[in-house]
Picture 1 (cartoon, one colour):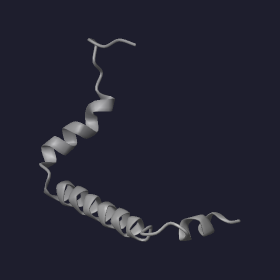
Picture 2 (cartoon, one colour):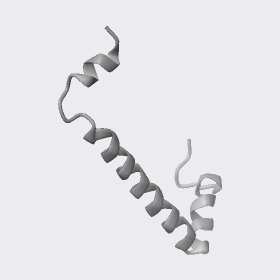
Picture 3 (cartoon, one colour):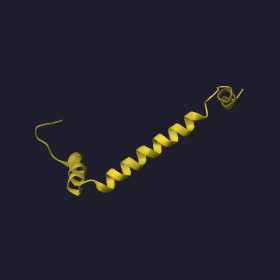
Length: 59
């Protein structure tokens, strides 16, 4: 028996794919909106964090 047969036997299962699609779309739109509206200096600072040479944290 295939996996799809198990899913078809569960009542109300069709709500979950639509809910996950709406959740993903809302998160993607929010992240896109933040990316376009974010302060460019803050984004530049965040992008340089891995490259900074910090003597206080030697490894």
